[in-house]
Length: 498
Image (cartoon, rainbow, N blue to C red; front, side, top):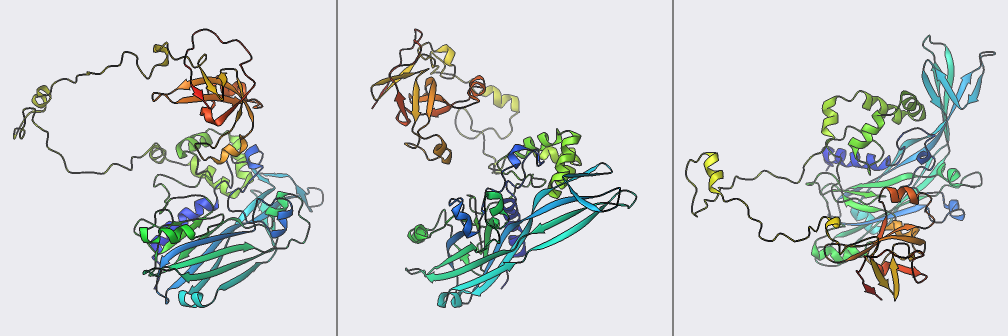
């Protein structure tokens, strides 16, 4: 039995987007600050890198549930990027010999030294019954290598050379399976991917580790004739077994279109079941967190010099520049937006104001005339949406009591996030000092304290734009007893939080 080719292609398109997520960011040239620290997702470092930074692992683990007979084939595809270093050499006009340069200019084109990435894949297939009887380990080795590409001018004369080199990689794919309890006897499948490389030289920095790393590593699992269970919304009978699955640095989701059941995608980033690439997307922009239209317009606004730098940085960036420069207007219009949640439905009869069925034939103006004009019977005296219309609300002078201490604009507090939310960014805020900018009340009467970090170098800019961090009173801790400056008259709102 074979996997559906269209379903597999659908899953691979999503996997490709994850493979190159953050590979190169706008403005797509190497001198940009954001491109100095690359490769943030699914990086499996060599084991020796743990002595430098133990937070970047050398292995990942996927566990998922599926229904399949013992005769079914389990097909595992491990995909990742391998770093390859590109150096640029120029032909010396004096002796015709090659020598290393930072940048080479040939007939208006620019070539720069850069760390590219090459796609790698490892496959393993095993029968489910054999895997139930014995675990399966596959070790793989990718040897070091080097490749050269000559660069000639418009007259065919040698102008330089691009030399790409890569180090060796060692890794392992470890498979295990077991039947779970209960009447359905689902199969719990475990897939571990490990980087087992021992670098020949001592690792001193992250850049050294990346040369021996499996980058953006992820797994596609296919079981023809099988049926994977959702790990995010499992059937009730499997909920406990799904909760017992241990996924380490991976997030398995159902792959392929909505009617596909025999594919699972284990991603290094969080996705939903059956993820897909938007039909309006004309190609990869390497930043799935951005809005395609905005990023496309910003890229089109780059100067010719900036586009030349981007083309010199990476071949994929060069393709992106060419694609956007040649984008027809109708494709750009498609990026403006799409409504996906509306569905066509049967037309509903228009009710007659007097009750009963409407006339068989009625002109549109007569129908409109029969309806009474809208009446507003509960207009608030003070518009809730207009803070300036409500004199009882003054964010600049209102205050709130926190642990017996008066907190208002100008107060200094310690940020203690986590009481009511879960955000990874809060790790960078916990325990830091902040200055209160305003105390606000929403339409439900809840209190929100707007603050700026005391050590934020761009605090003035954030304030001028009205951008603050917002916390509940139970997420801050007062420093001192009163704001440094006296409060103006007017604010009377007072809340006590212990």
